[in-house]
Length: 353
Image 1 (cartoon, one colour):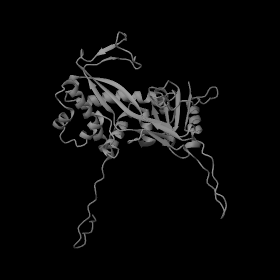
Image 2: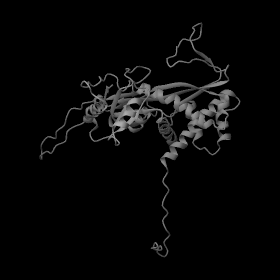
Image 3: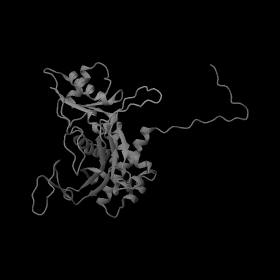
């Protein structure tokens, strides 16, 4: 067995620095985010227990928790805090098993609002390069896309947890699952729909983009070829993602013997037969930090995905839920987030039987 040469006299071996594990960092940030939700929920059940004090007493070694806890309670302007950026990426990663949209946003161009209310993003321009002679004019081409604005909107949802769940030894695992299941599908519904932009929300990625027409008798492979070919003019040799309903996801795995040359995501919010292709280099998003969290044990809520805004004052709505009566804590999450396509040619979709 050949041995390594001994270091020269007078020289000390240079240690190799340890590289941080990105997955471990993101897992720790997600853990801190979940702990902040637990601390805020505990405060709702016992107002004498302040979230910061509970966090310090329960998780004294969590150094990122105080910063994330402050950001979760009130909007933050600390745009230079790396812990908040990591927490956002950690939440996107945690949502991936429940949300194709989270995986899309994670792979596209990610920006930060910081202290800005809006961000102007240049449209996707694909000029044509060519060789030119000395003193000759350099060719250019008119940009196909136009500039887009990212405005701060908030994705909001209320999820419930019992007091026993918050104080359980399994609280972190249970609350993490509650948050993921509440936010993930909601993100997909908004990101992948066809609704226009409004004061409350950004436009769905499929808004104002007509579905591709397929020839009679076209199958799933024909649909995949059509959407990928359509967006290739923007994607070039870059990354392409295809989002399909669960039925089509299973069919892709059965039809294609090898891994396709593009990422395939599954979203239960898509109607069966819908196939969406996105050029990821044209997808841009901006997030203003981790979710802001409020908690209440006294609220009465209209438990619907499209709730009435005028309940109370004699207006009846069903079903209603009283958190006080059920000894339950309502966790309200508001996540400032926005997205846009830098070029409408970057998305194509169709429907197949």
